[in-house]
Amino acid sequence: TGTVETLEFQSEARQLLQLMIHSIYSNKDIFLRELVSNASDALDKLRLETYRDKDLQADTDNLHIEILLDSDARTLTVRDNGIGMSRDDVVNLIGTIAKSGTADFLRKLKESKESAGQDLIGQFGVGFYSSFMVADKVTLVTRRAGTDEGVRWESTGEGTYTIESLSDAPQGTSVTLHLKPADDEDHLYDYTSPWKVREIVKRYSDFITWPVQMAKTGEGEEGSAGLETVNSMKALWARSKDEVSDEEYHEFYKHISHDWTDPLETVRMQAEGTFEYQALLFLPSRAPMDLFMRDAKRGVQLYVKRVFIMDDCEALMPNYLRFVKGVVDAQDLSLNVSREILQQDRQIRAIRRRLEKKILSTVKTMMTEEPEKYATFWSEFGRAVKEGLIDDPENREQILEISSFASTHHAEKPTSLRDYVSRMKEGQEHIYYLTGDSRTTIENSPHLEAFRAKGYEVLILTDPVDEMWADAVSGFDGKTFQSVAKGEVDLGDETSEEKKAEYEDLLKWMSATLSDTVKEVRLSSRLTTSPSCIVGDAGDLTPTLEKMYRAMGQ
Ligand code: ADP
Ligand code: MG
Image (cartoon, rainbow, N blue to C red; front, side):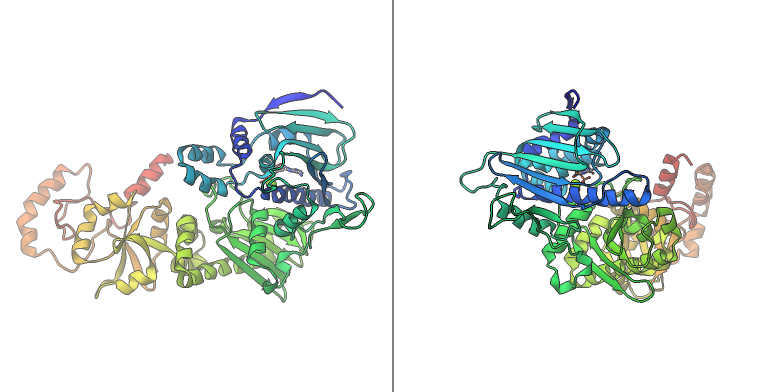
């Protein structure tokens, strides 16, 4: 046992702890879900590490999670004999918040009103820190598997924590909560009651694949009766559909995604035959804060015959569906499989194609059967999904089918392409669109005038990715996409020869005068009230794309 050091929490961690101490979540029971979830992750990691590193001096007997209650001392302890943490791990993982988007989240929280704040917090998982909702002091003892140095960490959550070395810590981690005083009125903090704790474990952590054990209740006194397992440990994806409730699926989603909000949609798949696998996938109800960050985690979890192999298996999900969470359990892969091998694996590629198609068809069904749900999905993830129009030509048609776009047809409601096509006017051959920074700039664009005057609907495309796909995708349902800002647009009324003759001199003079900046000045039928507008050549970059390239230094 070494000297006790006192360290400060990183400032973002401090702010989140304050939120916890002042109990912002109305449902405090979830602290146990978080601790059990961490313990389960730690056991998964240990098993994985022992596959990878045959020399690791780790104890893998009787891997389990244990919950110990002491009503006299008013403590609740969750312990696991999993991977554990080194001293550096403890400082980095527990003393700081590495989660991307934390600073952003805290800023938004500060700016938001009380009620919006509640809503925001619900989305932001605080994991281990949720202990401080129910405890006024937390003690964590841990030892990393394969090492000798144990660590004892303790904090009241108020700004600092202490840390010291231990010589005799068991492998794994134990987290002891010194519970806040019981609330006499509703026993809010009665987390030393075995019945209550069992009930919480059943409700939130039943599917955990490791045994969660507690002292036997009932006959006999504590200690004498031994331990019993309180969760069923059944892999949710392996159980039949009608056996599992929505709530169970939702809790499982929260465990694997570290999200605190229910998913929007649950998708199950069973494949038999040559490539046997089961998949349980989820569409989240909100986009993560790092959806567009380069280093964001993506992909689903991979299991092989019920054994957890890896998180964030990007080989199983195309990049544009990186927000999809879930589990794929494959029957015929080696437990030693690596990320590199997966990228090459034929079977994995086949599974990925199937998952992708299934997600696209799920969204399509949602579109017709649950339009509001679809609208939520699209407003959260549409920007990412549209990347698929460029990345995945093979599924382009299906992606277009499930896409929707703002349009001049309606001020707020986006339209599907199918609906656009059904409204096309007699003789209209193209699907017209205009790209730009915002709806307002686009609506005020002179390019739109003649289209508006003629009653042609124009798609209003304001996402950066729109610039890219609109160029790459030729058409939908036999109709080509046509930018109203490019090339000569034939709206049916020729500018007459007399008019051309009448303006010939003026046009010549203007072309000459402006020759440094424009290629040509011509009469146009596309304007109704503006005197002139600038038009790109059919093959040109749009102004926004030009700006993007320039910003990237090209
Ligand atoms: P998250 O689980 O979302 O990463 P947490 O706040 O729950 O966030 O935990 C932070 C980190 O602390 C975990 O990612 C893990 O590395 C580490 N950790 C927490 N509990 C344990 C444990 N029981 N064993 C090993 N590491 C743990
Ligand atoms: Mg966690």
